[in-house]
Amino acid sequence: MLKTIALENFNLASAIHQHALHSPHTTAIACQSQTLSYGEFAERAARLASCLTLSPEGQAPRVGILASRGVDACVALLGACWAGATYVPIALKQPQDRILTLLAQCNLSALITDDEGLKLLTGRLLQACPTLVIHVGQPPLTAWENPSHSLIQLTSLPPATLSAPALVKASDTAYIIFTSGTTGIPKGVMISAGAARHYVTMICQQLGLQASDRALETCELSFDFSVHNMFSTWEAGAALHILPATTVMNAVKFVKHSELTVWNSVPSLAGMLRQLKALAPGSLATLRLTVFGGEQLPASTVTAWQSAAPNSLIFNLYGPTEATVFCLYQVVSKPLALTPGRDAVSIGLPLPGNEAQVVDENDQPVARNTPGELLIAGVQLSDGYLGAPALTTARFPLLEGRRWYRTGDLALCDEHGRFHCLGRIDNQVKVMGYRVELEEIDAHLRMVCGSDIVGSVAWPVADGMARGIVSFVNAASIDAPRTIEALKSRLPPYMLPNRIIALNAIPLSANGKVDRKALRQLLDTQAP
Ligand code: AMP
Image 1 (cartoon, helix red, strand yellow):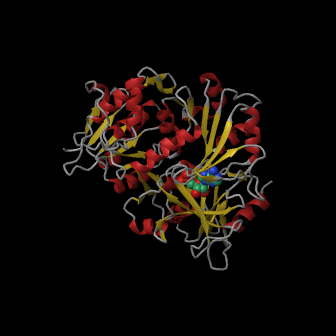
Image 2 (tube, protein in one colour):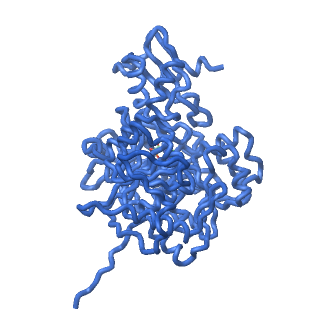
Image 3 (cartoon, protein in one colour):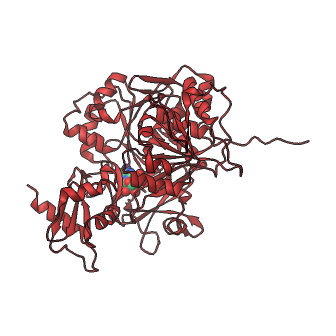
């Protein structure tokens, strides 16, 4: 007798499909005046998916999402998942040239856009786009007059029946997220559906998320923290409340007004709210859970948060995009598990399915309490960088038959087996939660100012967090405003230097490299 084996579906949309069948009227997303129930959300996604068919070779389509966070962006993303496509978020707030660089790398089969994204689709950008463009927002007032590209309006498609999302294998690519690249070109991190599904189900369980939760979204789709926010919330059948980018400073009011129970953000946002004196004692009393991640969590932020959100358990989550969102965790409890000699919380232990070790320059494990590079292994590891096999081999080495990812983080493992992050081995920094390779800024600065010797540093640093970038140029003088203006067409806003300073002789280290430490010291001594 023939046995049929049911294949497991690793489609990220599967959980939403189930909630749409069993609790269709429960809220899935809310943003400003728009709310979608699970039933409505799934129907729109299924309708969108009907336009995204498999290529003749049977390969999953690769679909770009040109949208800023909001209900439409979520529909775009879920529609791509529903079709079994790989989704590729493309941030709106970046120069056209950078978007063109991403498009050139991706070979997209379709592009889904919201109202804001649609405004960008003209001229050079449109020429670089796939011929199929789908718009998920309100129908545009002016007719689409681009014969080279067909525009499909989601609202004009017939309603869809709720058939199950396309079958996705664990090895299929769920999404590609671009991060800053040292050469000046962003690199696309490919995450498999197996890794993404593992992360979502595992973290939902670890955090104990429930269908009654109302969780905060503070991230754009191009930052992989959004994968956590969206899919862990939807896995639980809970409601995702999206904080509009224009009202970030009113986050406390937003939480109160929507009676949110789960906070998700980089610690920088909490640090900024603290500086604005918005974290009054008890002001976040509805929160039962806080997830901080993506950058160092300062003890001072924790103290302020514990007073503002007295009913909330706090998690510090650590992880690079290359290991699917977060792979280590520390529950923040008293006494605080602090990193020796630093005002920051430990990054704790590997999450289920992940492994971590600290190695020396010969990739040999070091003794407890000895600093070295942090390596990660396990089911969440990325398949590598899009179209960059050499870089992939270098960053994901096979050590004694096991595949690891070199994080570039300097770390140690203490006597309790707890990991601590001590900074970077390379020149990657976090500015307000954004990952920035200082060399990427330098590469563009060289091209703009014509000087070979340049160096950028993250400065100032307050509470252990970088607030901006200052760049130096080896020159007698520089027209800083003009140079910054020129960089605007090459770099996203968070990578732009706040200041550019000309130095007759840029300090160099013994091996002739720009000495960034000396540059930071120079700024520190000049600061009032
Ligand atoms: P991204 O790929 O943008 O998530 O950035 C990953 C990098 O951010 C890591 O390699 C660390 O340098 C830093 N990072 C992420 N989470 C934490 C954390 N909880 N504590 C300290 N650093 C972190």
